[in-house]
Image 1 (cartoon, helix red, strand yellow):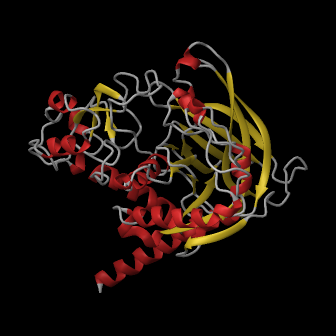
Image 2 (tube, helix red, strand yellow; image 1 turned 90 degrees about the vertical axis):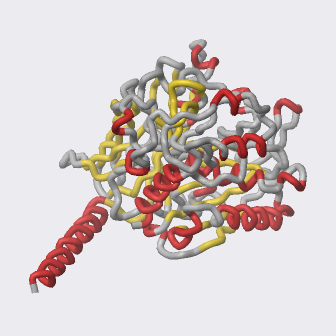
Image 3 (cartoon, rainbow, N blue to C red; image 1 turned 135 degrees about the vertical axis):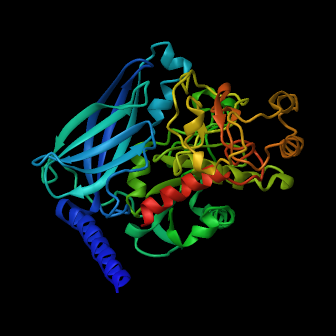
Length: 457
């Protein structure tokens, strides 16, 4: 009898909790989106944020219960407050293309750039105070921008989505408010190549859902795609003098790194995407050239065709790897590849990413629950021997790692986050460490599962 009473009380409290969360959404929001476009201008040491425009969009794909971000991921965070009561009613962490650019040589030389961005929030019923905060060197959020937005103002743009492209499902499992909604956009596919685009989606999404943890949580996802053709086929490749007329204006050689592709035309991308509900935008490029990119809660980008038949697994590797960045907030764990960043992870400062650490407090490493008692922190491995193997010998490197004493163990292994020393990764090999068929490590998988649950429960 006592147990029955306890169960009734638990059920009642759960109903109250979920009812309260739903009531909060219904009280403050309408089930559609507000898109807030803004500019970030500055250098390595300076940043100014200015409002561009505010638009109504027809779909809100996010959770209607998990309104306040509890993940603590991202270099920035959007916070929304009810103006009258001052109560925070929405928040979401994210990274920005501008923040990446700030660590480049160009920004360090005090060259000014302006980069556009957008925040997508549920459409408010009443006046809100919209804020953007960024982490300081201590990883604390500091407010940088604030403005009052009246959702009923004549200055809010209420026009229908600009484009009338075909919107289709690849996978449909339920309401967008209760699933992770991936929206796939094409870049450099002409109208005649839409069949190829659909084939590429099928190939890459098949690989995606073969990888843990997505294979065991497939029912938590919806996958949409928009058949948005480009005038010309392919993607800009400045080093080869190739420039084509494409919809999203993507280009290789971002930050002068040949393989890095980013910087889509933000306004066009958002206008195209407005025709479907989405939590994550993924752009597929119609090219055989290896490359891509991923920025947390912005978008992922991936090339689609293997250059050689024996490398047909590589696009799938890139596809999953970049989604790890953009959705899971995962850091790159490699340290020997050429990048354009300066002091991306300041010495002695604990990174916010869930899969790397500065190991300032070994007794309380962020993935402590997955570390076995007999695994030392830091965890020894033959890093010098590994580094002596040529980069192109991925099979030899993979076998070398498997011979290490702590292979298959969660620990803290020196080398990660683009630096050889001072940053530690949680596992010897992982989808975020090497270009191989290795899956996400246990720490990365747990981090991704946490984000999936946040969007779908």
